[in-house]
Image 1 (cartoon, one colour):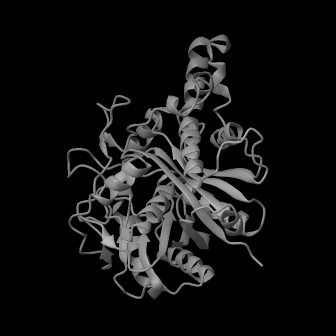
Image 2 (image 1 turned 180 degrees about the vertical axis):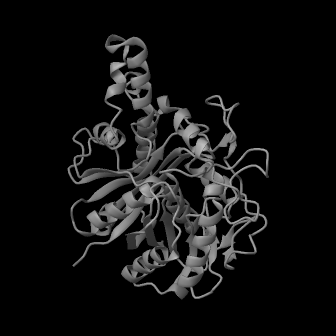
Image 3 (image 1 turned 30 degrees about the vertical axis):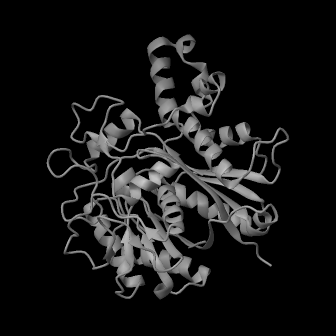
Length: 406
């Protein structure tokens, strides 16, 4: 008998605040996108991002350990601790043999590598900060979470650009259902690094500040690009029988996973809706859920003009033209490797209140898009506990999850 993947804890460290503040702001339609303050953007076309607020890593990590972590590592550790607390899994001196980590990230290692190499070139080997070196690898965040929490189960890092966070949850759910772990800390963490931002600005893919209304505007007629975001969005996915045995509150279940790829340029958004349609249908088929049973779609849309149009058409095809409630959190938390995990955290938390979060920045749906049940301005009622969450990345990696909110 196949095991069931239950969601027993969720946490957010975001541009809207931590978990409860994140949800309250999201349901109110607020955006965490604002002018960048952490580095100089005076020469950039884009000058806004969804930067972290109300996050003090020292509240979670002792100073001597914190100085050995970069921003992504600290975010991952703090978010994981919040999620484990929410799941009712206490810290243990003995640790946990059956609890592991599956994390998704794009930028883990990038910031530290850049800083390390800058100092190495400027000051030579003796001037390079040795404490940064262990953070220059992509799996540093997952390793730090495991070390801090003494989690000796599977430890894996996935880096699939914007699909990273949801891909991690998909793999975690599959590992739980296959009996490879009792519980997994999963999701995504990301920071905004100035050089990484600069490269995106050079490519002209970011929403231009000042030329249009501020912020990212998924599905809106005035959208003109995406906005970068940062944060940590983490879930605890656990074997349902294990969760019930320890009398944990079950927030939801992962019922179905869809994963495939589309043919596109390595840095371009998908241009063929076929793989997107198949990915959503794969998730629905595995979940045993019909399209007419789905209460909401948390879309991957981020404000990129052609990409939002493509996904809207794919959703309309999957749902046979039914105006299913459709939203995107990326108008609030921006785009990045953590954003799809943010969508899933939002879907679970809002769904527990019987609601679908609105799309921040969506005021005038683009009339050229396939008509959907746009959720904008205010939260909408969730008509069914089944929710579809999409993550379609530049370069062609596609993931969809179907969850049931409890």
